[in-house]
Image 1 (cartoon, rainbow, N blue to C red):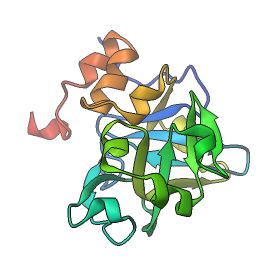
Image 2: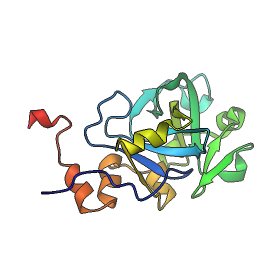
Image 3: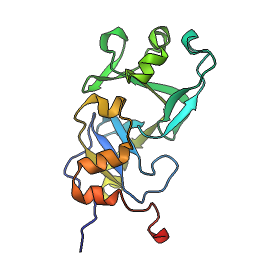
Image 4: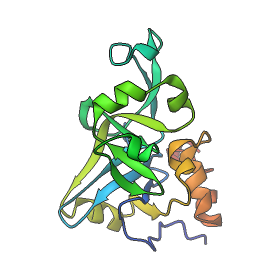
Length: 191
């Protein structure tokens, strides 16, 4: 018999990703990858990396005219708010280093001044609508129930620029058993 359980060898921490189990069905977390921007004993938050949407931001920057740009559904919290990660470093004031030269941006004036379609396309800036958040002990309880497996991020391109199916990519990085799980239908009853 094949063991198909998630085995968490890593604990959640800032700069790691959470990979949802193959059968998790929810609008935000179905076959999702969440980049953790913060994790401590009080709370955790991050962004779903692989749920793209198109948003119009022409009013924010003259560089964007009428064309919508790709952003991501970051999660179910504050769905009417814009957030961003970037790799621009010191050029963006008040940014917080997460890891692997990935920063959480907080200064929207700087963002609007330097943001261009090229910076989005090159993976220097990644936009999110909403975020994913957990209260004290909530994420650990979900991991205990095997809703998530925690994985390392080896390179900022995995977060900022990866163009493949990100969930399958990270599952495959975990090894043969996890790669096999990527072949399962979302609902096993459909098989």
